[in-house]
Each structure stands twice: as C-alpha cells, then as structure tokens.
Image (cartoon, rainbow, N blue to C red; front, side):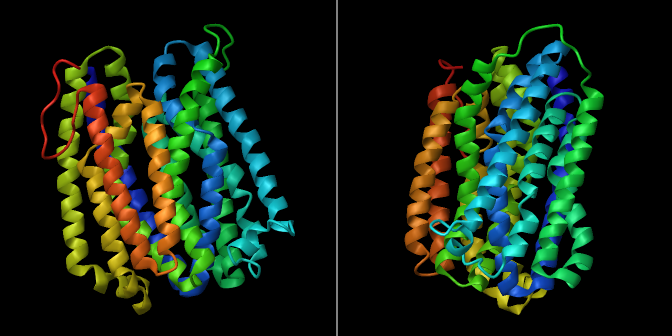
Length: 432
C-alpha cells in the first residue's frame, strides 16, 4: 500500500531527528562548558529572541507548506508559484523584523537590550541578529523539500545542519570572541544552511508558469491560525527563559534553558513522527480514509508513549549525576526543573499527534484558540512563578502543558472521532 511505503520512510527521518537532537544536546553542552553558567545565560536569552522572531517571519507557512504542497505535486506550475511565494514572503518579513529588532536595541523608551539585561552584550546581540533572516528562509525551504520530493534532505536542513555547523565553529570563535563568537557561529551556520536549502529547492522545482494559479485566500486562511499556533508554542518554550532573564540571575536563566532543552529530548520521536505523518494524514483525510488515519495515529501513539516512559525513567535514575558531569556541578540545580518539564512533555507525547490530526483535518481554528488560552495561562503563571525561582516556573509549565494536551485529545475525539491516547484505543464510528 502506498501509505505503508511512505510510513516506512519515517525510520530514516527518525534517525535524522535523533541525530539532530544529539547534536543539539552537544551544542548546549559546548555552550555551557565554553562560556560558563552566567554567559551561557546571556547566549540563551539572545537565542530565544532570535528564534521567536524567525518563527514570526515564517508567519505560519511551515505547516501550511506541509498541508498544501503535497496536493500540488502533479501541477508543476502551481508548485513553482507556491515555492516562489513562500520564499519571497518569508525573506521580506525576515528583513523587516530584523530591522525592527535593531531599531528597538537603540530605542531609549523601549530598549530590548535593557529589558532583558543585555546592556553589556550588544555585540553578541548584533552578531546573532542576521540569523533571523537566514534561519526563517532556511526553514521554509527545508519544509518545501520535505513536502515535495526530498523529505530526508529537508529534515537534515531543518533540524541537523545549523546545530552541527555551529558546534563545529564554536571552539574557535568562542575562544577568540566569547559570547559574541557564539553568536557569529550561529549566524554563519544559518547563512550556509539558508543558501544550501534555497539552491536545492531551485534545482528540484523548475520554472513553470502554466497550470493553476496560486490561491492566496487558501494560503492565508490556513497560515493565519497556524502562525498563531506555532508562534505561541515557541513562546511557551522560549518565553519562560525571557521572563527569567528579566527577574532572575543569568545563572538561573542558564539552568532553566538547559532544563527546557533536555526535557524536549522526550519529544524527539513525536517531532520525527509528525514530520512524516503530517502530509500522509492530510492526504488520507482528504480522501476520507478515516479508519486508515485512526490506525496510523493509534500505532504512532503507542510507540511514542513507550519511548517517553523510557526516557523519563532514565532521567529520574541518572539525571542529577548526568547534569553535573555533562554541564558542570552547578547545573545539578536543573534536575528538579528538568523532571517537572519532562512530566508535561510525557503527557504531550502520550496523547499522540493530536495537534497534527486536528490541523490536517481543517480544525486549525480550534487549535489556534486552544493554544492562545494555553499560552496566556502559561505566561501568567510563569510570570508569577519567576519571582520565586526556576522550580516554580517548571511546575507551572508542566501543569498547563498537561491540561492543554488532554484538552486537544478530547477535541480530536469530538471533531474527528479519534482519541489517540495510549490508554484509550476507542474511536467514534459515527464521526469517522
């Protein structure tokens, strides 16, 4: 069966995502070891600003590409027009947002550097600022490749290329330039990845002006809610680090950043599975093959849950010792926040790819509204918790993440007739 063959390819994608996660982990270790706890806190703060802004530049096109391009494969003219529109739009927004950040860094009334206690780190901030443009463009081109004909190449460019190149450049540049050197390393890596991705996309999608016209209304209708969802999700990940940068010490920021990134190791398989399943679910659902969709996500949820339980068990047993050995003895303080954050992520993967299911079944608005409420609650609780410490911040995030994913699971049963939870194998025959 065609879809089973596509599903088998997920093994390679999972391998790429796993390698990317290992590389990203080594990158975090290198940052903390080379810069120390306080200066790595500065780096993570700037990194959070850059990644949030780069996501804003993509304006919701990531998931829109995965949803629309698989339907345009046979129409070469439409495929080319979509590619041109997606890349041009992202590049222009990226330039605009990077320029806005530069202006805010000079503002006397709303100075972004003063807000996040980066007044003594202007050079590091400016060194990483161009990465907004390169990172956003690279991610769009990588998603085009994933959704069209080169899922492996797209996955490598999306998740592996930048951390691997940055890791290679860090020792030389950090030794000479400190935190600024780390910013330069990241920007250069994003630049190389961006141009590589654009060249490969242009090679694979040739100029073709015949065929259907691009449907801007459909693109905007899909991208707006998806932008809200993806932007708020990244804000959930990076926002607490920025809030901690305002109220806590740079060392505490570094602890929270490390705990956050380690907790996300539990979602490696979910991210990889979502990458390969999103276009398959979209196509199956469009063809009204609901039983096949349910079978697909149920099996994926079972595997994801077993993996998550294994990771968190290992973290409980050796986590504190591991933090001390890998990052330095002072990072043992990140043990409790890491476990709390992992608890929230365990609920996330145990509910399966519910968000992807809802998005690909045209329930973007529901996901958007749910994510808005989730983000507001998380940021309010995180803001209050930031006055008490990183353990309280982690507990707030764990609580809201768990409630959010349980709600989405319930919504998927109501809207799609499917409840892909490890302990709930039923589905609503009347709906599907």
